[in-house]
Length: 125
Length: 125
Image (cartoon, rainbow over the protein chains, first blue to last red):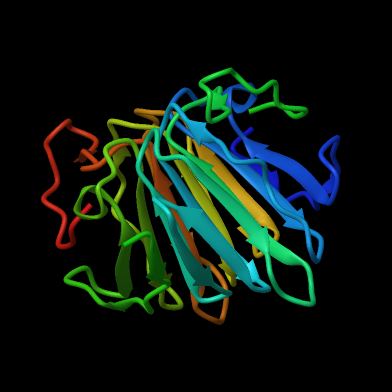
């Protein structure tokens, strides 16, 4: 099966984050994983990095990227480009949901805390 | 620079296809390339395959995927998942523009005709 549905995100184990895995190794991929996520107003990801390149497509809302000691604002006309291994954190800084698609250059996606400890993800990647 | 603009596609050298490269090696990536494309009504890609995994996100319009001797219809609620090396062709079969984002698990993206000959792309990948 090659055509799939862009499934709506559902509540995940991380507070304020809803998630749907759109594609990854379960769909026969080795080099790509796609996550559709919604961050509620005020929500943020933990600080983390990945063992692969990442691009975040923003579809709606307002976010802030914290990376390299900088703060960069992004919105519905933005994409965030994060080469492999770059520690970062995303915040919803708007009054509405922040709607994003996380795109990763591997499947599964290794995710790590700032101290290097692997983070167990509550979804398939 | 981590935050980029989702640039609008512009006319490319392939008739009926407008293109914008959103991310790839020029943005410091090795494992991802993102292309935003518009296929005019009646337009199609050439038959081809890639040397990496691909996912096509459909944003608007109606398309047809030809793969493995099958024809599969897709629309704005669909994603097309194509593991590495799978020959395929995309057609706009609707009355409006087909708006898609092509996501690839490598940068640059190797693209090949059915006889195995490398296709020179008229855009950076």
